[in-house]
Length: 286
Image (cartoon, rainbow, N blue to C red):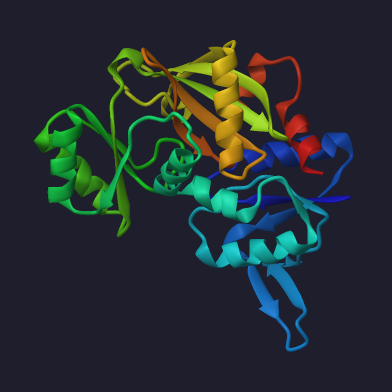
C-alpha cells in the first residue's frame, strides 16, 4: 500500500501531519507536488501522471485541497482512475467553490446561512448589501482559512472590502448576513468515512469576527445535538464527499451550515482529543 499525500502551498499542516502519522504507522507514502503535476496521454490511450519528482504510482490518495492549480486538477482526475480517493474530484471542486457549495446544499435541502452569489461588480454588491441588511460578510468564491473574507457594516466598508477582494483578480462574489447572535462563534465538525469524527466550538479572538483558528480563534470540544450531527453528515454527503470539515452556526432558528471544506485543517483540533485524528483520516483513505 502506497498512500499519496498532496502538497499544496495553501495548506501545509494537513499533508505534513498525514506524512508523519503514516510514517508512525509504517505506511509507505508518496509526497505529491500539486503545482508541478502534469498528465500525459499516449496515442495508445495510456495515461501517466507526473510531478517534479517523477511518475506518480500510488494505491490511494489522502483528502487534498485542489484550489489554485487548475492544470493539476486534470492530473488528479486521471490519478483517481487508478487510486482510491475518499473524496471524488467533483465533490472536492464543489467544496472549493463557495457559490457552487451553496447551490448544491440548497438543491439537497440543507439548512444554510442565506447566501447571495453575484458578479464581481460594486453596484451589485452595494445593492445586495442593502437588501440583506448590514452588517454583511463578503467572500470570494474560493479561499481557505478565512482568506478573502471581509465584514462590512456600511456602504463605505463594502467599497473598501470590494477593492481588497477585487485585487485578487476576476471571479464571483458571495454575500451573507452576519448572524449577530452567534457573536463570533461557530462549530467545526470533522466528518471522515462519511461519519462524524470530532467537533469543536470556535470563538473568535477580540476584535475579530472570523472564528477561524488561523485568525486567532480559540476552540474546545463540543457535543452535537442529533440535528447538528445529521446536518453535518448530510451536508457532506450532498456534496458527494466522504471527508469534510463542516462549519455550523448555532442560530436562534436552529443550526445552519456556513461552509463545507473538502480538506479541512484538523491539526489544531488534535490536542483536544485522546486519539489520533490523522490516523482516523488515513484509515478511511486506504
